[in-house]
Amino acid sequence: MSELTRKANDLRRSLPPERTGTPPQMKGQLLGTLPHREGEVRISWDIYEDHHFLSVRLWTVDDNKQYWPSKIGFTVRLRDLPTLGEAIGEALDMALAETEQQNRARTLEANAPF
Image (cartoon, rainbow, N blue to C red; front, side, top):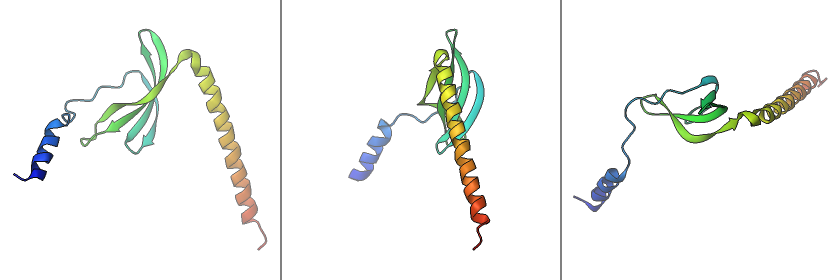
């Protein structure tokens, strides 16, 4: 056995086993999903020990096209939800103003006399 083959076999033995079985079911109510290169970001309304919260988590897809929750994500406590809602509302207003400005610029460009 070559040194390279021995090292490759050592590495294979040291790796954690591949995921098997059925992925966990998402708890809570799914509110929306966003595409992500590794799977999808799921936004859900959830509860833990009688405390409601908003969950935003990356679910990765495996080779069998099954989705698994990752450690990447965050939760928003009920008391912090109004602040997040206001910030998202402001972002929506800013995005709308930006798209309106872009549309006006396109209209002016399309009607330019040259």
